[in-house]
Amino acid sequence: MKTLLPMMLGLASAAFMSLAGAAYAAGDEKLAAALPEAVRAAGKLNVTISLAYPPMEFSDAGSTDLKGFDIDLAKAIAERLGLTPEFQNVDFPQLIPQVVTGRSDLIMTAFSDKVERQTQLDFIDYFKTGNVFYSSTDHQGEIKTEADLCGKTVAVATGTSWVTWAEELGKSICPADKLITVIQIPTQAEHIMQIRQGRAQASVIGLEGLLDLMKQEPGKFYQIGAVGEVNHYGIAFAKANGQLRDAVHATLDALKADGTYAQILDRYGLKEAGVEEFKINGATK
Image (tube, rainbow, N blue to C red; front, top):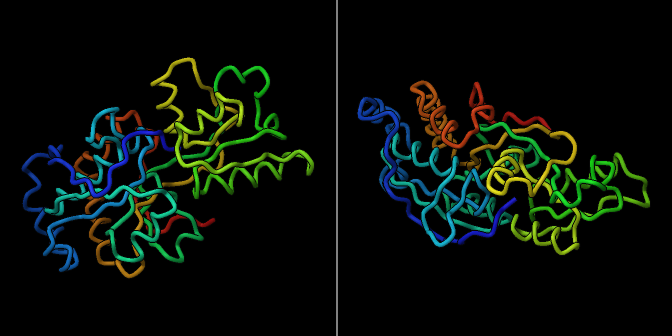
């Protein structure tokens, strides 16, 4: 899921060039007025991410500049609210602790809205996705469908919902004595290394991540089977932070109305992943 790119903690982003221009200045004031006083006074929006997962959040090799759909949308939200975005990079399992302890305002990093996560968090669903198995093309002859993964080893990003998905799918399609072995490893680059070294035969990724990987390295990777468990990524907030959640929700509606949301999707070739409505806690399973 996460490629091995520079890991940066507490990065402050550069100013984001507004896509809507100065015309929304008056609307800015109205949206900003809905912010919690502490956030408005601080003048910052602390966004927790987990690098790296192109095209959602990543840095080019040798660079500390953050890029990706999540990064650009977070910058647009912050700017519309009159805030400076600050990005805090943590390992994936630390995302929830980061916000529930108040060290960050929100999570925005290809983070799925799940019912079990809603016990601690509120989500604004903003991006459609789905799970896919993939491997290097040298496995294409032996592994064509999900059933061909029975008895094989699959590397999955540590602590993600993909772990359970891969395990449960294996139980549903494989003999009890030939289940899919799921190993948890942090980054996408390490998953690929495991495949190339023969320690794993496949991995799991979001559809948008696989499309980007195949774009960056043509002919080297392929999708195994169909897209599974279509779901949504959500911007996540601590349950006690409902006022900020509502302010961000209203800001997303404004960004969609003036075309900014669509422009950022198009920038990364993700038009089909856009949502018609930004639902709060839309996941039901």
